[in-house]
Amino acid sequence: MSNTIRPVHTAPTFMQGVWLVSNREIKARVRSKSFLIATGILLLISMASVIVGGILSQSTTLTKVAAVGTAISAVEQADAFDIVKANTIADAEALVRDGSVEAAVVADARADSVLGITVIAKTSAPSEVLSALSVSPNVKILDPAEQDGFLAYLVAIGFGIIFLMSATTFGATIAQSVVEEKQTRIVEILMSTISVRALLAGKVLGNSLMAFAQIVAIGLLVSIGLAVTGQRVLLADVGPAIVWFAVFFAFGFVLLASLYAATASMVSRQEDVGSATSPVLFLVMVPYFLVIFFNDNPLVLAIMSYVPFSAPVGMPVRIFLGEAQWWEPVLSLVVLALSTMVVIVIGSRIYSNALLRMGARVSFRDALKR
Image (cartoon, rainbow, N blue to C red; front, side, top):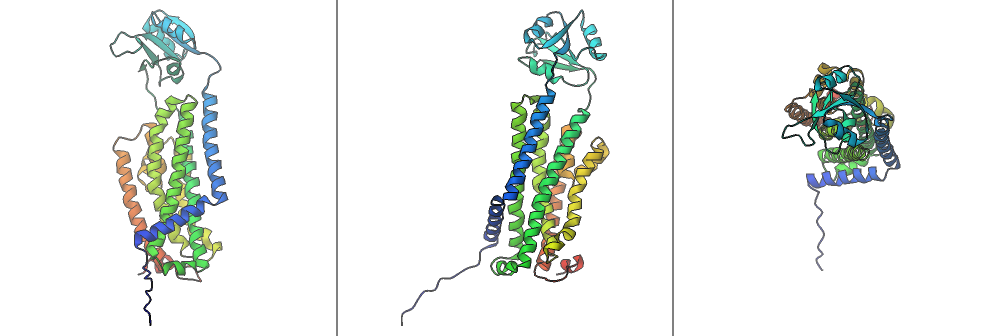
């Protein structure tokens, strides 16, 4: 009798299980036509907003500026201004203050002056004047003001819409996937090979990577669009906010994805997914409505910056407005990261206890029991 060697099948480790599930989730999203179409539409909307903004920002008439003395020749070389000659710097400043001109250009003999001129403006740096000059001169602001209200509103709405659409799209995908696997009993086969926590971690990781990739793609597209359309001044203002938004979104979505998976595991039918995940949807929609109605309220934005569910929107808006101190984004991110860890632990408990329970909806009390 010959001895045959039977292959030994070992269960995958936790990290191997997470990778297998996350890889499966990513491939499922990439192959989904609805996901590709939704992503394409979101990218087109982002690019269209940049193009429209660039068109609207272009003035059809020459910018009126005041010029004094030797600065007149420098302004004339730009061939882009309606020049009002002033006798003294005080006269030029008076024209700026009363709104007769957009800005004033005066001679500057300081060593750090590149062009030997300084641009004087009333409330903020005049982007049209600066972009028309070959090299940016020094800028003197008479009455410093906050960001333009309408522009701040558009930026706040933009962050709110992107956060809302990405979180709801991928969150709903996670919830439907959990219930589908539970309803078809596939989850029982999966759990015979990998642990429940590995299954949850893989779902959250795979969809989080896809959501983060979508946010990064939008950010890069908007940044490139602003640079190509000549809106470099706006890019310099909104660029840091976009970077911080991507960082905050990465943590914030993991928190929401864990909640979506946990709440979806409490039901056994696709028809019940909406009602089960409605509390999470409410948390996603709150930041969107807050920035619509309170984008000009510093107190509300400050509170949003430290609440985990709204920090991915509130803090980037405050960074764009210049209202956040350098340490505030770091502190807010720490609070969000700690909150995400707590939610993952609670979500994992609910997911593990409710995943194999079929029939009636599992209550939160039963799902949290050991």
